[in-house]
Image (cartoon, rainbow, N blue to C red; front, side, top):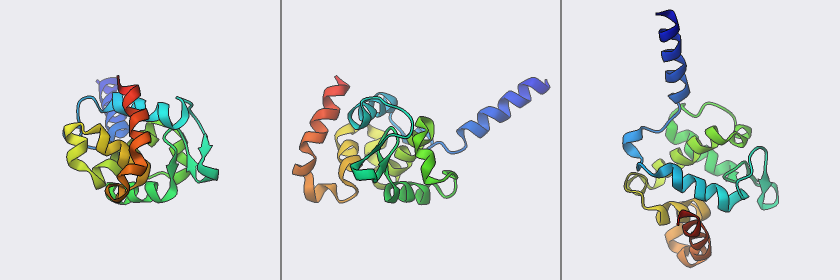
Length: 142
């Protein structure tokens, strides 16, 4: 009985920073894999990019991280440097999507989410600038 209870606590603690699954599309992991391939070619760890401004497998900038952390209301409770860990970075990305495009996250509107990830919450004002990025992500979805 103690082993079962311990396993339960580990599972709860592991999921503590997760976005509610009811708010995400069932195929979100496939989309995140495509995003990861476009951002770093699938590399893991402390990958840097954008002249040192982006970090980790999803190339997260610090302001992006701070927006996601604010939306999570303390559920993302590690520092920015932890976005080098794939599982934590994935949660950061999901919280960011949940903050700015919750309907797209729930419905699986990958184009909207890819453009948001690439250009930020004002992506609609510069949609043409995200066309190539969306094409790359979409290619990995097929």
